[in-house]
Figure 1: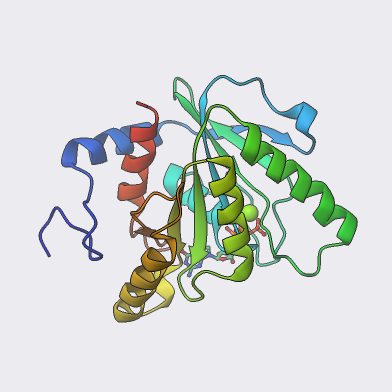
Figure 2 (figure 1 turned 60 degrees about the vertical axis):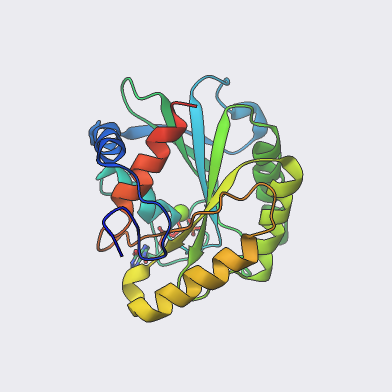
Length: 221
Ligand code: GTP
Ligand code: MG
């Protein structure tokens, strides 16, 4: 392993890219708005990146860890905590971060599931300035059937997405390596998938500098 490679062998960002990412996320990130219905979506303007994934996978925790702002996005042990699209921004930052409601939350009432499924799906398919969706996968569990459904939706809608493994602190490095490889194999033929997978721990900070650099690059596109 050289210093330009992560342990999966994917090309790591350069020092300059890491620094640009660090500066972007050093800004004072704050809450912008919550969107419960499509007509509440902000006018298209800034680049957007969204964080999607099963309930409890660690979406809100990752946003807090990236921005270094504790409690910015509400986290919880109760799956289904985030029920709306929550927008976060920072002064002079050229992008918004969008925290999405989790999917696959079995206990949610049916009407609620339908309402947010509709919101999320319409958002994902129709947002012109949505540059990438980070689809978070719990590194202990790997890809599940409902993850694959979402990936298929993104493929059909031609929305670029990248997989991020979460809670890397909860498994052994060898296991993480295996999940990385299995996941990479599973997405190899998916048209809208970005091939590189990033392993993260919001708890321990692993992978965050890399992800910040990746997000910064999206603001240049
Ligand atoms: P919903 O909004 O319900 O869809 O959940 P979410 O995906 O936003 O998950 P959230 O960030 O609320 O985290 C769920 C639980 O996982 C919380 O108890 C977090 O503390 C825990 N968690 C999140 N990230 C990590 C991590 O990197 N490591 C560890 N050990 N725990 C984590
Ligand atoms: Mg959440």
